[in-house]
Length: 280
Image (cartoon, rainbow, N blue to C red; front, top):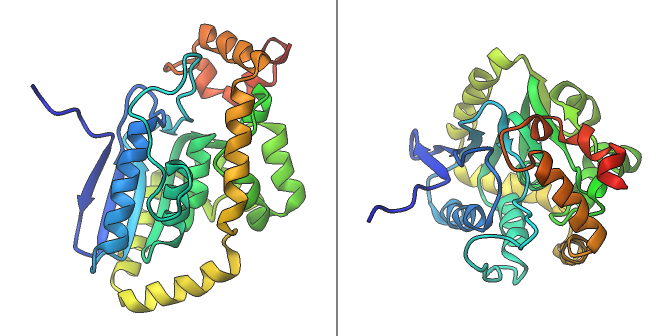
């Protein structure tokens, strides 16, 4: 019997610089196993005495983290325990802890990062995107769902109230180039330059003093991160809204059209959730 293949491939290029590559075909859906692997990785980042920077990337050029694996019969995989650190649902616990970890986390974005994928990227300290191939968005309201991973708390600090509402209520896709203009990402780079830029930047930070990184980041965290209490109500609303009959009907219609598969609907999900057939 062989062990199940891990969804996240971790490489330690040096004691100070790690990469974590999402590799969960067909489209890098986030599921309970993804969250458990992230929990274990964040614990390592919190406790390793030498790591200074971690880059999160994808092995799939079309999908970074597509979204959460919401299906009609409920989430698949093992039951998730509450987070040991915060007591919140483990997804929220992982995101909060990643933001506060004493290392620098960088999302190197190529492909689609919607819903939970966008929420994960927002929890990273910095986001760099392919101008041509990155797609970000919070599509949930287009299905009648409240986003559960806290983008309502994180986006306003990055782009202001009006643009945050445009993202979460418009439920549409944002290219890497537009995401940069809005402050969704730090910067968008030509796709051919993304990896070299992120590699050089990560290596630069990895050469600095860990204690200086930890303490300086901590002061920025104090000034910018939302308090923990704002996150659980959003996830509770997500659970309630997913259970509504009309929401389940919208998800069922999209599943019939190719949701969760390597399909046109997944590549242009922001467009499809805005069609009358998704909202009727």
